[in-house]
Length: 214
Image: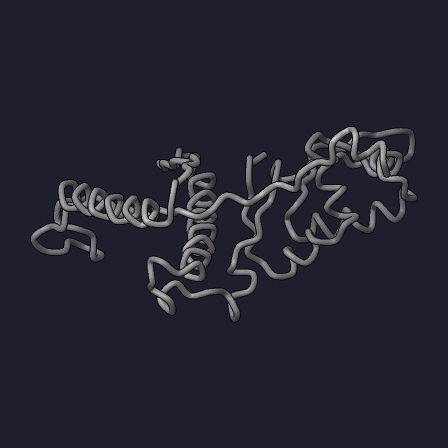
């Protein structure tokens, strides 16, 4: 089972978004049969079987084992991943194009870059899993509070300068491309994305006093 599977097929994306099937996928983080699932989701076994066949058809669940019970063979299935992410590829005709914006201060460009990242890393994960190899990635995640918009702008400027300096230091342009367009030195090209955006605000929970007054 993968930790995260990126869904690229539009039909599979549609199947995964059905609320009942989403619940079934969550329950199938551990192997289970249609009978077991029916008790958990509160639906007839025949109805659960219908949804399971659709999920299996789109490669979102897979057969783990078959158990023989008298004259009946019980199929035990499991979700192919612990969680799922729908790639922009599933909406290829309307997916955002990073080249359309190309403005480092544009929120739309940030969103387009994030969409491209989901698409590319999803393909890389699938390829690495098929080859039984580890995928070399690196990420930084954190939060920073700025005293003012001027401080935020200054930080962005310094960050851009620092990243550019590091890129100039470590980038191997190669004197001439080798076979297949790869750098002559044999290095592998990597994607670098640095993002900065406000943290989403969480709704304030009403105090005990406010709840008592409701």
